[in-house]
Length: 135
Image (tube, rainbow, N blue to C red; front, side, top):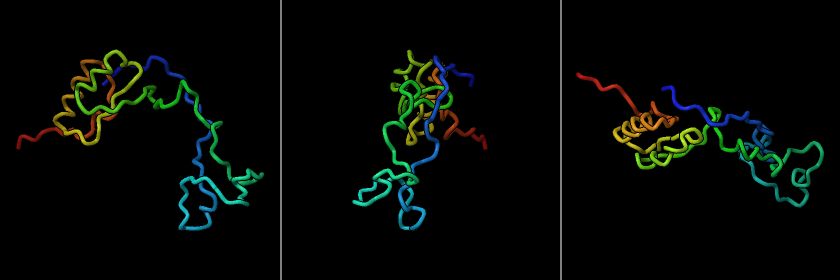
């Protein structure tokens, strides 16, 4: 499906591509790598010593114009029925529809058909759709 092109496609610049890892998660198996703020009184990471792990801060934030934009240039909106899709009619060059995971294949098929009529891009249009067998 050759859907609409994004209205403005700016290059997305990430200030940091690596994830922030939790202090000492490489030393202990019980300490998972998902970030937790260090709260100890003598913590090197909390005190931001040279050579310690970097801590997340507001300065790592993305550009406001490119925040929440997917690589294809659209922002994503979760859709569960055709009425939700109608909201994107006037914004089909900015937003793309993503069909919810608990939507049935019958309703999903009607959503995808209506999206083609409205020229709205559906990010997961092929999900849960199979060709029917005549056997």
